Length: 227
Image 1 (cartoon, rainbow, N blue to C red):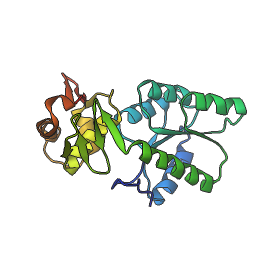
Image 2 (cartoon, helix red, strand yellow):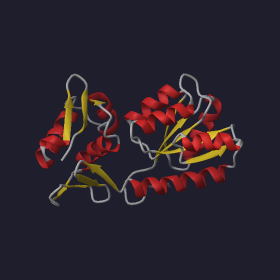
Image 3 (cartoon, rainbow, N blue to C red):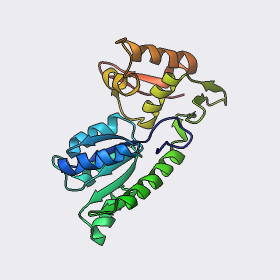
């Protein structure tokens, strides 16, 4: 199974593809290999998911409805989303590949493709994602993913519980994104019964790490703060 190195969770993929039959088949194959897969059938939905949920790799077609694949990539990069991105498309000229890479893609694969090659490219991107995500910056401090702890600017190390870590990791992965309580509950606390679970764990994080670590956006929800 494609476990992300050093982190006890399965690799999460987002497939953004408007060919429903093709993407359902590909998603089924990837899930059979152990990946956790979400699917978006247009660029706007893909953008929303990529901004609101943490993924290791996003696989994007180019000719998408509503929002083109390269526009989607450019918007993600302009929002400082550094998720590894593979463009998977029938547009395979040299100019097409250059445009895709210049838009922010980390890799480019043309259709038709060999499944073995796709899996190899995904493994390579996941390795890069694991190396990139070993530490997430929080202002002058950092979140160390392998140790499940926050390192404060003065060097103090603060261990986190599994749920505290999960909440802070989501916020730190996309530091400019404002998350609603509902989206955080779905992503981090999907099995919780309490409607106030997000507020409770924000309180726990602020008590352990400092009030500024999570910023409240009135009437909307939360985003990453500072240390």
